[in-house]
Length: 606
Image (cartoon, rainbow, N blue to C red; front, side, top):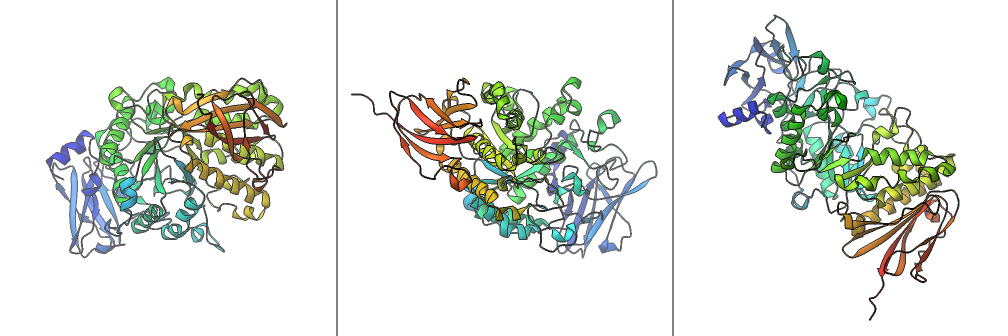
């Protein structure tokens, strides 16, 4: 690290600190470096010195410690033994280490980043943030998507990154997803935290392999034309004493005050006002994008960054807001086509606005309001939906305030919330027609899409990180037909410019009917590139002859009906064409159904 890099590190402007700090393997001599400004001294211990402490030398301004060790081998274990000013001695993992042991073991592992040659130039050259393209994300927990047959323990069941590479990219491509979003892979101590309470922010979790394996997985996705996003927890880290907490005997990464030092999850909050924390987290995000060719990051729990402890009543955390602005500006400068998405449930303005206009600079914000209102509506019995009609129109009142992404994430399938299909009102058989109508509404509504694994199967069991998805459901016709529907819906979304190209332009959407004159029925158009698609919905339990008067229609060609028999409905799968009579059309909508129609415009009168 030269003087310029050192200044950037201390200012909180560094994005490549991992290139200097951490373990850097070379066959002749491997160099270890750690930042511990308040330590009385730091020793290096590991396999290569029989775990006998060897003092590291202070370098630069004395806040960094360094040691070059000959004969180190890849895969060997090591730790830093930190001597604190109060006389305590604590063994810590490497904050910038590229590998960690599998829990409950706690050592760092000597790894190299020079272990995989990517073959994804064609993908990287045409990659986009997808503002005007389809973005259809399949959220995945790597350890429970699929598991090995006959495994007797959780660990034996995990597929490796290499094994996932052989199955997951092709599955996502086959079923119409444009991107996979992997739940956090930064090393973490507890399976039940799902990766959100990590400590190895530069180490792919050893549950599924190592650096080479994860790079191979991302590369395989790109070969299939599928992007990869990484869920990233920038708010907090695990409390384990071998991790980041009181690393040099002081609150180096966390807040010194207990009042804001711990959060609702019982983990430690990063102190985003501290420049070295900013440099650490920014470098971590850039590391996953630059070194693994990840296509973007979903930043978790942004509300806990914007507001102190996530509570608007406690005020805005100005230091964390500045961190987010700096992070997004820096990543967009270094990786111009990478996606930065915010999981944010607040009303804080300008999350996706440019930072020079006071915004946070994200590309997308999760629309939690849309998600909650929509699911609340579908929980209601049909007789109550008429009174809640505008729960489904309200989203378009605020939609153009931000670039929104519509999420049905893992959080909606756990902890007593029920899965998406299970949330639908009524009994088992009646839930599937409603779920088909729900997803048709989701894919027709402006905004990019995200859905959690298992939802495409119509899974009824809540997600459990210790069990794979219930793939045997596909042997039941109703579940197999539901996935067939999801496949065709995704392909239509991918192929039709009107459903994605003008998501964030008001002329890309127009209500045809949102007046509630026909109970539980709605209609709107999506438009782009001269293409018009009429989307009509009946969320009630009675069939409807739905009369509409869309402007300038010559003919309508049916693209999709959620009630088609091959989807598990009752309508024969025979797309039809309609012509208006006196500028009005009547659509025959089955109960709990949706239809998409391609609009051929009326020829101009002579």
